[in-house]
Length: 437
Image (tube, rainbow, N blue to C red; front, top):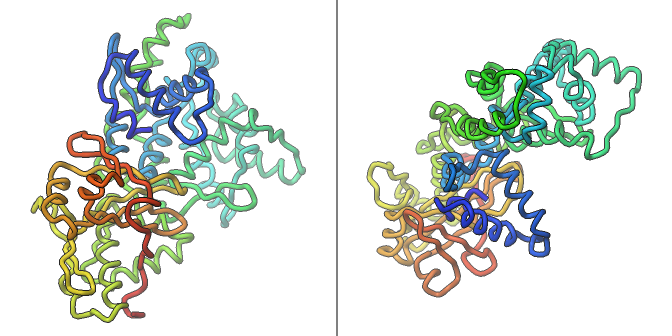
């Protein structure tokens, strides 16, 4: 959706809405949806995720939309979203905001959840989890929490007491929806892990991010300046403030995705993969490295392992990560088994689920390099998640476009849309420890 919003660009609001509705309808399974349902999709994206900005005449993509479209890092996106989201919010309808303001509600759900689980683990000296129903009935629906700031420990003690008593909760979808959504967002952010017991647990591979969550340095204060009695018109006027707040830039590297944390199932595996990869002299992986650079480093490792596995260790020294300031239009110099030169541009998407990754962006410089190097130019499209790393390779994307096997949209370079069944091929991604080759 971010890619579609960015592709539309700045337009008069009526035209923007028409174009976005058309894009939403084109998503799989949406063709037969009623216009009202399509509009609900669009307004939820608009209000909740902070991807669209507007004034009296125009609508256009926000900074978050552009960043997500360009970087393809859904994990980082959901970290930022979960970190900032609170009640009341500009994502809610004005009458719902009014009700919360009149009840003096000010609640940051993700911060509260993570503090509660962290404190509970300290008390219990073991891993603890929480279900959607427990969070709904013991936290979200309790004014002693969302209005009166009951401590996280007291909420945990209530949950424990209810477990001992065997308390039954209402699990209907519409009842647990809001609390469940927050837990799901935190799972998408790789902050929580959902286990088969339907409980969500802290992901201790992300302890640095968790620490930053529970000590927030940003908050949304615009509602504090409204006068009582609260007027719906005044609340509506703050919607743009909310979108601006959601798009306020967080310090560089603050929530960048730790790729090793994303592909690891537990702390032991996390440490083992990091140690294994450190045996590769060219591999650089700092805690705050971004998704793009992480994908490039992993690909350098992959290329060297590929050559070794195929008895071409003599070519390994030719595989090099190119410093970005050289601006050559690709990331890696490599070799094929016949010593043919390969120029590899790496495009990575980080996600905790197998989402579509059939769109990526090439800058003008990258597209020009693809035109120049033709069959020696490769795009390595990576999807990184708990299932591992999925690699799809497209050779000579310019020729693929000329032969109508991929589509492009011109946007400060080109957005490329491909069908994995038609363009390129999926290949195994290699991450074995060097000493085992």
